[in-house]
Amino acid sequence: MLLERVLGDGAQQLRLRRTERRIDTCGLRVRKTLEAFDWAFQKNLNRALIEGLANLDFIDAREDVLITGKSGTGKSHILQALALRACEREIQVRYVRCVDLIDDLYAGLADRTYDARLRRWARAEWLVIDDVGLGQLRRRDDEPTAAHMLFNLLDRRHEHASTAVTSNIKLGEWGKYLGDATLAAAILDRLAMTSIHIDIDGPSYRDHLAKKRAKDHGIVDAAA
Image 1 (spheres, rainbow, N blue to C red):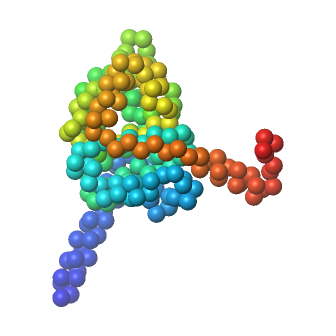
Image 2: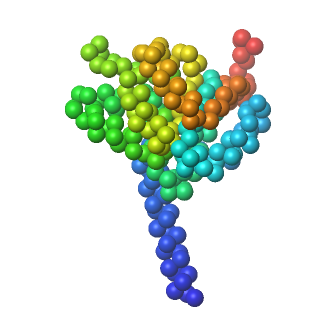
Image 3: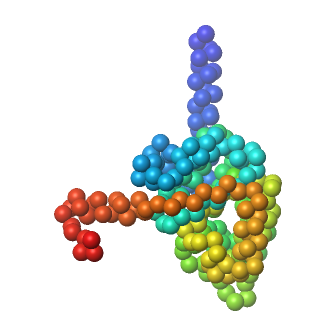
């Protein structure tokens, strides 16, 4: 009985260490949970749908997730919480901001490791690309567009592995942001085929916190 308990504790510790290693290496810089999400603040958000995603069946089904909405509405919080849960389920997750993903692929062009980097991103069991539309995408005139790189990556993963994307710009603005309207449309076409699309039409939680802190410190908003 004692031996079984010792072995059981050892196996549990091993699982915990593997989970911690998976979280440390997947790219998450903060650990968010769905339990910490302020559902009362985002009243128009379909809570049942989000909590349904938490069972992670969509990853096995190779379905994509696309979450849109203005900055501060909780898009990143939701995907970071799902990514944390996926790590706990021993799913291979890679989390990256869109601007950092594109920077990494451009670096591959410079040192001739582009194909290897593309394969590495493509083989993740679940890839989370956060904040399409946030941050300046750098490119020289003689290099392919960000749309070209993102299309190559998502085309490799299409119907083979699940990808999640958040965007704080309108889908019609992806072409301008990524540098190629035709390829941006092709990206969205692939996402539309296999994605669960959630649009968060609500206020910014960050603005809410900023106003609350100002009020707590006795600062009056002149624009109010």
